[in-house]
Amino acid sequence: MNAFVGQTFQVNQLISIKQVVEFTGVGRSTIYEMMNENSPYYDPTFPKKVKITQNRIGWSAWEVY
View 1 (cartoon, rainbow, N blue to C red):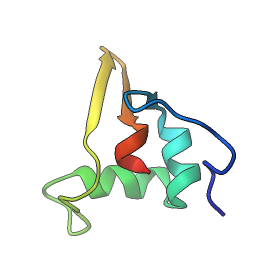
View 2: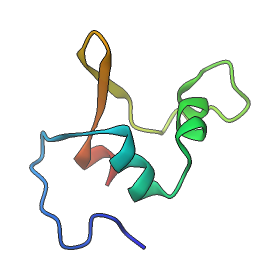
View 3: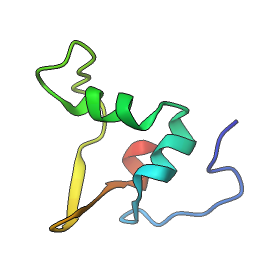
View 4: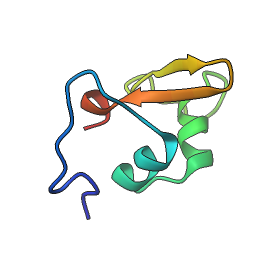
């Protein structure tokens, strides 16, 4: 099921890892593996993370969609 059904996002809105997991149906650790260039699960087409603060990251809602 698409987690974004019925939700409206702005083009530049950042979403949390929780929302990325809900939308993609992929687990949190798998998402981090897909971002790791040294992992066998690396996916260069997966949306890049955006650093919000020193300890917080997000993803572009548009790119994940």
